[in-house]
Image (cartoon, rainbow, N blue to C red; front, side, top):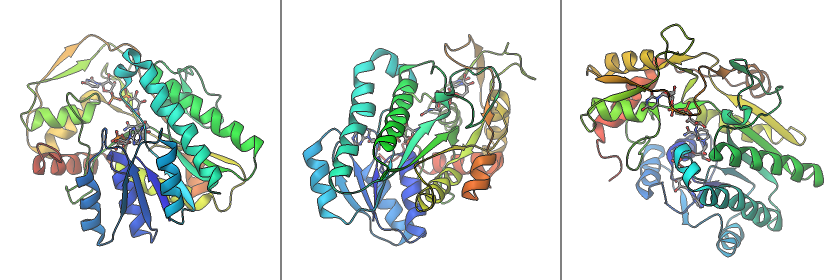
Length: 336
Ligand code: NAD
Ligand code: WQD
């Protein structure tokens, strides 16, 4: 059985679905601060299978012990944490507490329960600004431009040091690029609370009429159309990458680090255009000043995951947009 922390959230819920389809049994552990019980119910409907749901916080050691004691857990996929870049600059303590202290509590509870396999949600942000747009796992990590990114780097380092000290640990560090999209059914997807921080949820809310216009943060970058390029990855491809990484823990020694991205960049204007085509809606936008901390362009070198996990992205921009639109138009208020 797989413990999925943060399994009621965006990437977690899609991964739970893929795990169930691959034949795994799943316990979701989530405090619901940014996730939804309804997402887990819909995953059960989609898969026709049951998910054990345990509401709890990863900082609550007693509750973790209880859950780890109740189920025959063989590994954890650890999504739980806070992820809003801007908020992390205003509330550093909350971010280090949830993401770093939460992870240490989880790891202690796992070790005491004899569970030594973990897949961790990391981020391309750990590369910092390496001065080249293609990020590969061989490159050293850099200085993240925000506190959120620091928490990911700290937990990566913690996991490496833990594994070095105790070789029973097997660790997958998955560095996501820019997750977007939704399950093709349109019944599960990303449900941001309040104003979206990320590009695609913002575009989708403009398309559905919830927001007036998008602000494009800078059109004077040294790129073809002047807007930033990112490596957008369909959340179902990302979810499949987790199951491949989990399977790989059985055969790797120590720590595996894998980029999960598609290996090419799309600009903000391309994203607007593609979404307008998929939705048949106009996306009004204005050009605004650059956003602090944004790099002009980066994308994954995805070859390591291809060779070692036999994984690569299968879904292109059109599917990312169509699936986001299906989710957004069928659920204009998310899970509420
Ligand atoms: P999300 O907010 O939808 O999911 C996170 C889940 O964790 C939520 O359901 C939330 O309720 C839960 N959670 C938060 N703090 C918790 C705590 N202390 N105890 C228990 N549960 C807690 O976010 P997501 O986009 O699905 O991201 C999942 C993971 O992937 C996060 O660790 C995030 O940092 C990482 N990540 C996300 C992106 C992205 O762009 N979405 C990119 C790189 C990495
Ligand atoms: C994408 C592009 C913006 C909103 C962040 C985190 C990263 C990871 C993924 C983690 C940029 C532009 C955006 C808007 C815009 N998160 N934009 N108008 O910044 O690449 O990555 O999310 O868990 O760690 O840093 O993603 O979606 O915010 O921005 O023009 O209203 O869209 O400037 O070029 P980003 P994003």
